[in-house]
Picture (cartoon, rainbow, N blue to C red):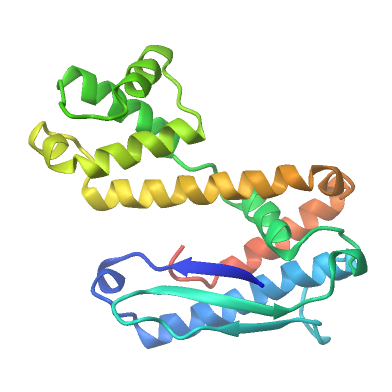
Length: 220
């Protein structure tokens, strides 16, 4: 069973509330977005409107108390072999997201934070060697970025006292984004040969349709 998670940001979401109208618009847009991806995976064609039944059993899990993560539980989909695009739905979703959204800013932030840690002489950092290497090279790959951001969160009070410009929530968001980006990259690499079979014209059509689906999402 695959699972997708949506995270809501903003003042109301941070207080565990959402405006009902905007939440309804999100659900509508998310449904069209998800089913457009799955329809493409199954048929290999990009549809402008979902007018026919999509063979998929996708359910919503009720939000847990104090949490505004929303999980979609995907119980039943055609097998990979039955689809025009021979990849899992999770990989198809990762591929689509990688085409729509820009790369996370987490890596650049990690380089900046590593440099800040050394210049501010932040103590008790477990990743001191990684911090030193990243500062020297001026580059952080995904694994290093995740370790540095995790280290900053663990020692955030010290960074805050030293005058770091990022809030604790900023760091948490960057860490989640980079972890998600790493997972997407892994899934896309796993099915690289299949994704290469999608011709550029079809890919452009898919991206255009998905971006149109996103226009009514109030949280993006």
